[in-house]
Image 1: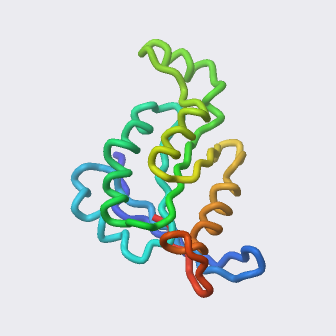
Image 2: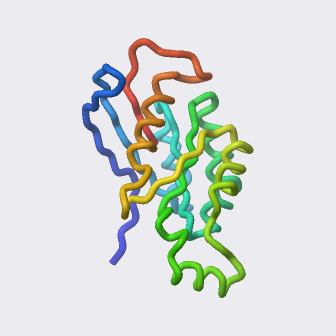
Length: 162
């Protein structure tokens, strides 16, 4: 049986632009029953990644309807990155057929970029399956985390991604 994530953490040391940085990733639960717990993971976050799936248009709608309002409330001024995942499925015939049968299509880079602009986020896409863009996601997160809240460059920082 599927057991949903409540909070899953991963911590490692990374070298980035000549600096050693402690990278702490927090994957938080999206289910409604965790709406009251999830904000406990937000304090001290240096950058927020909101992730949606290119093959699931509802997940992009949820960015504006659920995730951005919550993040704006609890993490004002924290750098924000919108990440489109599963880019490999954009050209997958089965995915296009399934979405087409519902009157939908995979999310385009332009659609993702448009939502990112609306919420004041940087935009990046990746595919864990092919590896394309995955390093870009982490490099952008590290770069943004070093800016700190409100875009000010910070001398000493660790990177906490939620």
